[in-house]
Amino acid sequence: MKVDDIKTIGVVGAGTMGSGIAQVAASAGFKVVLRDISDEALERGMNIIKKSLSRMVKKEKITQNQADEIINRIKTTKDLSDLKDVDYVIEAVFEKMEIKKELFSELDKLTREEVILSTNTSSLSITEIASATERPDKVVGMHFFNPVPVLPLVEIVQGLTTSDETVELAYQLAKKMGKTPIKTKDQPGFIVNRILVPYMNEAAWAFMEGVGSAEEIDQAMKLGANMPIGPLALIDLVGVDVALDVLEVLYKEFGDPKFRPAPILRQMARAGHLGRKTGKGFFTYEDKT
Ligand code: 3HC
Image 1 (cartoon, helix red, strand yellow):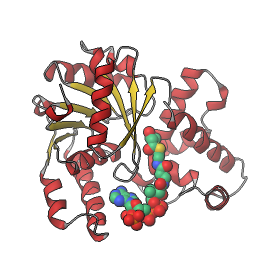
Image 2 (cartoon, protein in one colour; image 1 turned 180 degrees about the vertical axis):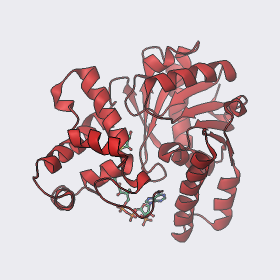
Image 3 (cartoon, helix red, strand yellow; image 1 turned 120 degrees about the vertical axis):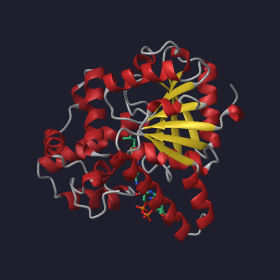
């Protein structure tokens, strides 16, 4: 398959990442089938997309007409079998290996054999996800960054069994979606999260130890290290649960105590204080999209 043969992309998961990926794909002219398991999840996902597009209309980056066309290219569904005719799949569901393996096994049975099944996982093993399918050479990581419409990078992750052709196609597709791909090997956290998430974790430890308030820690990193947002606001942006999941993987896979998650993250996850998406994390938010 060539990148120009890809007309329709199936996106599985309409959360923060899945909706952003659907938006970027539709903006690049692809038809998108966006799947999640509930009407509420799909509605929330479409609201995130609409809000992001209207921001772009206001900034005169796109016209209202273009925004409408982008929305019209996205079809939502709760039925996974609606992905049976797509030309490429990008999965962006919860960071739980068992869920991903089950899903990939279903997608493997459902889609045409030449279709590449990619995952937006932030840290799980591509090789292990691929092992749940009969096409491990066609499973690849495509790791986007939050907010997807704004951040240019996509990490293209090659598992042990991923073919060079698959990597090349994912690379070309990311470019066609207007992104800048960088190839990386299947190591926990790939490039960005291996470096970025321990930084966020250290900020959570510093907060727990009373080094400063959440505001002070974040202001310090913005003013002293020129970060666009502080590390605690960044945890709220990516999700406390997601940051914790990545840390758990890094900690377990490397067996190195330097990745030990700050206990506050686990407490916050248990309390449902997941950051922006629930309206409360290290900071509070009126708008949950
Ligand atoms: N959709 C469309 N446009 C958006 C947007 C969205 N969701 N969010 C922000 N923008 C646009 C704004 O309209 C603005 O446009 P302009 O340049 O034309 O004025 C521009 O982006 C900057 O936004 P703001 O002025 O509102 O605010 P900031 O200057 O703080 O920028 C930010 C927002 C780009 C999100 C910036 O704060 C940032 O880069 N933060 C760090 C994000 C980051 O590190 N993400 C990676 C997280 S790790 C990850 O995702 C991996 C996962 O696996 C854990």
